[in-house]
Image (cartoon, rainbow, N blue to C red; front, side, top):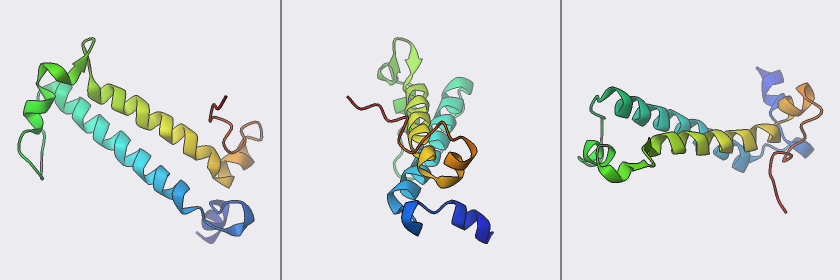
Length: 108
């Protein structure tokens, strides 16, 4: 356990809170996008704890772009966010020296 924690420490021995936050939000976003996509694909009603109307939004004509449900776009977006944050952790860089932290970030 201690080895896993030390492997997740960023450069300089400090744990990068924004990296952990982005990792957690990416996993939550992927899970929610998959949940909504599954509900949209199977036609099951979604559980909506805050406001009623999630099913009305998912079934509206505005919930699709070129016939593709918006939840699929959300999945791709959050998967890309996950791909951006994973190289920030030392355990990834140690396994694949060709991928350096931030190398997937495309800046001009």
